[in-house]
Amino acid sequence: VSQQRLMAWGGGRNLSAQGPFILLGFPGPQGLRAGLFVLFLVAYALTVAGNLAIIALVGAHRHLQTPMYFFLCNLSFLEIWFTTACAPKTLATLARRGSAISLGGCAAQMYFVFALGCTEYFLLAAMAYDRALAICRPLRYSSLMTPGRCARLALGSWLGGFSAISAPAALVARLSFCGSRVINHFFCDIAPWIVLACGDTRVVELVSFGIAFCVILGSCFITLVSYACIILTIVGIPSAAGRRRAFSTCSSHLTVVLLWYGSTIFLHVRTSVESSLDLTKAVTVLNTVVTPVLNPFIYTLRNKDVKEALWRWVQGR
Image 1 (spheres, helix red, strand yellow):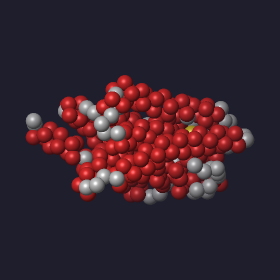
Image 2: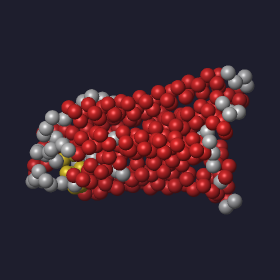
Image 3: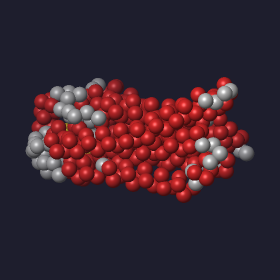
Image 4: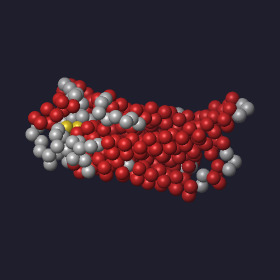
């Protein structure tokens, strides 16, 4: 959808400068939107149920109460809120062929979606560090990864994520909008919101790019260094069975990392927001809908301990 068509669509709604924004969502025939509504609803329900199940399993089984599963519970809790930040409004947008949202509501949604996204980068880096210690320093792992250190790493991830997005969120919230107020997205993303601003947005774009660059590359550096140490250690294990066992302890995390970075690097590390909004919207579905719903299944299907705990829970033991 071109910017000109969005301007015309917004003008047709006779929105004043103080009126609400309109989330365009996925324009198209009613049958397509109905199918997307069902898809988003099922994905949202599975995300909440699957991540709640992981948190319940870890809480109910003492042998799962280790640093790795402590971080996994944090990740599952985050995924629930990350999806909740945009899924309900997306469902409303699909049901009504566009949905109104106030300036304050749009700013709040944008802040929480991106703050939780930044937190996920930091949590995945903390989990990579935990796996590196477990594989590279197995004899000292218990003394190095103490409950206190786990709590500090988790708390630092949450505080870092919510602090990192504060500056660009404040700048975006201060923009003025004098034309169309139709957001070409299914939630209040930064890029399509900047496109609607009538003033100079270069500072907002540069700050947003800089924060994304630092968060993504910083967490990616920690993750890469951790996995470099893991790979070097695994290669040095003499037996094939030992190598497989060592790799199995981090394979689920590695799969989640590849999914997350694969979708979000395209979305956030770029200097232009003037084009490719429709492509951005399509890739965001992978980031906000598909990845959160896959995470519980990845950790369940690829993790022997979780599968055993789930089987015991099903049997009522």
